Image (cartoon, rainbow, N blue to C red; front, side, top):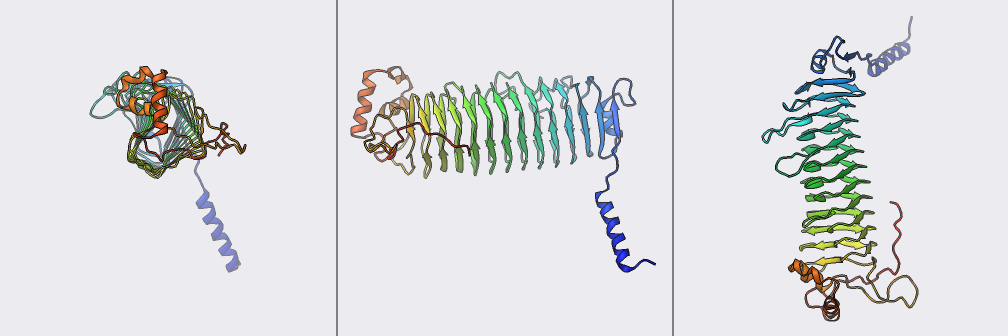
Length: 419
């Protein structure tokens, strides 16, 4: 006869088995000679948590609705939407879509057709897919705790009005977007009302508008990404508590191009980034308590353009190397800190050999103010006339804040320790 202790142990063991028991998932194959010849049919007949493996081939299908937890995988299957609309529509938690090539998404200026749409779902994974000939690529709406990994998106956008975005999040939180490649769409990656997301190790290039675009999003992290040759690199608007670390912004060149735009952004950090060969490295407007540290600004037209209403920002330990203008500053008031940077155009001296210039450096030149007001004046950039007016402004500031200076300029290029 079992004792009470033995019964308790038996009941506990049964509970453990029930908690950790997982029925073996059924595997369904899709091919021309399989029981299921279309993906939609396999999805319809599958049970929750089943696996659907799609054999190599081309499947002309659209509006494939996934409304239960499933895993869909392939090695080389192509799904052709035949320009009829969306291809996969996910409306369930715990869905994985892995390895597909998706082509010929329909175009609609009312419905924003996407190759993959995820709606009101959690714990989804979209990975290893290739998307071509798209309107929108991957569109996530009102979803959370998902992953978008190692996808490749190739658009053919030539203008903003007739193209969509590569990866778009709308009211979606806690999403990981990593190791993706996006090119030639409107915005490479776009987030609106999406918080606590991580964007890492992506490449976004040759996009019509922005490589990455935030609107009304908070507490997002962008790291180890490259934004190259876009209409503009990254735009952060009406957001707060963002972090951008170890990114590269290069060759974003044009009349209104920049590496990063900050508009109405607060309590944010940009550190350990490289801004190279951009029309403007960072364009700032109405942004406060932003930290810019350990960045490299190399051969940009304007390294930093502060357009006004920017207060209590810290610009420290950066390298400003061979930019046409290191800093453009609108307004006569300065409550920002510009100390301890290296400026390649600094000509001061260091008599006590402590590595810090003995003469403060004034990074705002009068000619940058002139060009900001009259862009055509740029043709005089290398003339003696420019040197004279910049010298006169240095001696007696009239148009630039007299307290805007680097009190402790570095004599040598700053080495950035990895963060």
